[in-house]
Image (cartoon, rainbow, N blue to C red):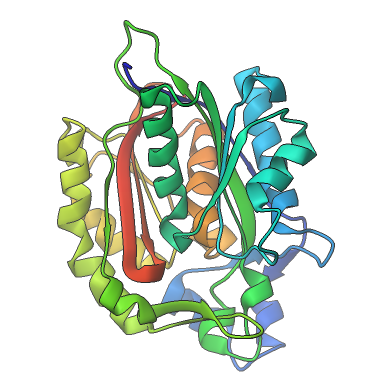
Length: 315
């Protein structure tokens, strides 16, 4: 197979917005404290009647509409999430049922904040191998449901949302639109980012994650560009996991993408885990900050201390 490409993207966020001032009335914090440490101003919060698969289905429906496709055109659904409440049916099957996709392969991918880029690589591999013709790849998380709202070190970070991409085979005369993935993990440091316990709660060792992300990841991200046959300065856009502005900005600088638009959606959306990359990417495309065919680095990192990145061409 010649490879695959992203045909369209879409995103969705719940209507309710939680500001820093709102949080200051809930815990001992302030707008200045939050902005200076993580760069976040607002985040979107899903209600109790808005499950993860509903967020995912909204984003996926927009991507399908943008691609000019129907549910019957999809034969693979991948949902990257770490906040599914139930074990079965999985989120992918529930999304397929909501959208009326007739008989897809349906799988969830739990690599937390790097989940979307892992799922995107998996879809690319499936299309290349001929195991799928068109795939819906979705990142969706409801982080506010696994948050301790009395812990000011974590509750200021999180938000809810979803982003989606339609992946399809490239025409024979077209270069692949999804570059080779570079992925891996540091499993012995998996304790640095956790969603565990009963009830499940999000916790992290912030300084450990910051040091790892800003020192160990830049050469890995540059190697992902190399695998795509590009230098970092050739990139038109960089979409990193939207963890914290204090991580995004130095990491983007160290990658060397001096001509790229750097996504900073964390400012308005908070950390949405697996949703953060497709959500931010879809917004860049929607606003015209990147153009069709532009090379953009997608690079996820975080939970499990896992990472995955690839260069894609904009739809």
